[in-house]
Length: 443
Picture 1 (cartoon, rainbow, N blue to C red):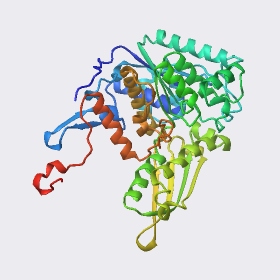
Picture 2: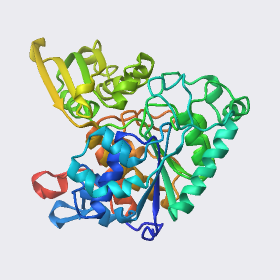
Picture 3: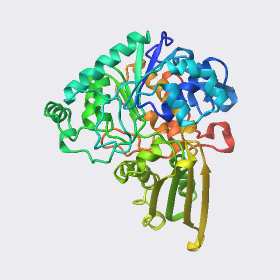
Picture 4: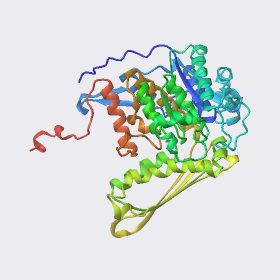
């Protein structure tokens, strides 16, 4: 299979621009700087540690993903950020307390030079953070122009040849998309009218697309999930991906739920709760902000279990999700799941999961992978929704009219087959009948 588009190696610096300079983004930046020094391993990163099998199992052709397709090299990544607080990345890293003192010491100098530009802020949408570093713009159009100028400045300051945006902002209060945001034409009118429905995350994404920069949304906030911005991305010839990183408890759901469905075990209820003490936990302590996270967390089970096809097994699932702000725990999030299942003849059983994880340690490699793959898609000339990147998101996007796939293993197959296609290799179906010849004759 020949690839019609011959991709050249990624050359020059790639700027990763992050609206939001918090625990996740600084852990990502610090990790990359440690990798550059050979002082850490990229554990959790599909692009850096993952492999892809090519051809038949008997061919024994397995290659690293970063050798299969021409990804930007980690050594060429540079960083820019915005935040509504003025701390530099080293100060945020220290305050967040994710990394050890030894690791922070190795990259403190590099991160101290990453100073955020003033952020766009709406105090009605982010209510638990005292903002002291915000743009003085009074109109959405002013904010967009200021952000576009920031992006142009970042590329000059960082001597970057290309850029991608990965939105890592705090969770905004939940607002269902209004009619003002549903089409590009209506969005343009709402921007002109300085409409109150428009959230800061949307402004960053809109500005980036207008500036020719691909966008991925690592938050549950409304942005590229809206048809209006999807229309703009297609018009501008840019790839988009999102939304909300699938890092901890939801990752476990996308592993366990497919197993229950594969074995046709029934589900009565799934109770999930979390305790988290970092800034994200503080923001989510606001019920209106938690609602946005709840929406992205709660939708996973239904799409995997397909209750419309299996009403006796999954027709009446009681699904409860909660997050509690608990400062002593810091970034070390703890998730508890109680799963009430039933099996043969309807007899009840239970599964208990206690996931003591590190929120930003799980999220940081996802930001790296998303940035590199989004840049790859851009160099491929792909535009609009990148469904093959669903693997990384709680609420992945699909073209209108297509059901969204949340099964982690189906998402992984889609991801790897897309990479095979980019490299000019055949997809792998795992059918396997051709290995058995006359033992399994195919009519």
